[in-house]
Length: 83
Image 1 (cartoon, rainbow, N blue to C red):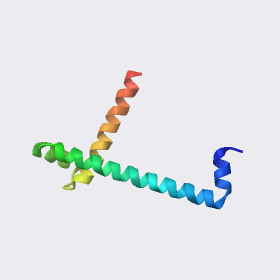
Image 2 (cartoon, rainbow, N blue to C red):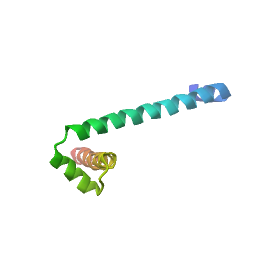
Image 3 (cartoon, rainbow, N blue to C red):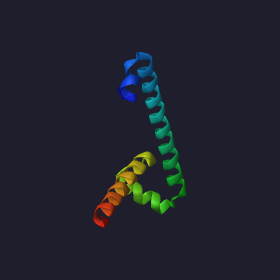
């Protein structure tokens, strides 16, 4: 029996694991929000306008989400072409 199977066998353990996963997701979301605020605050007004225009939004959080998507695709492309 694997450790995961053992943990999930007990309802109390499964509930604890689910709570731990939910808390981890909340922590990641809070960390992402902090990174987004730092990203926005460090940019010039021109850069803010650029990313809002590119994302077709007036919302910094949506511009941040768009920025992450664009840079993730660029990074993935760079890794694939370098291999």
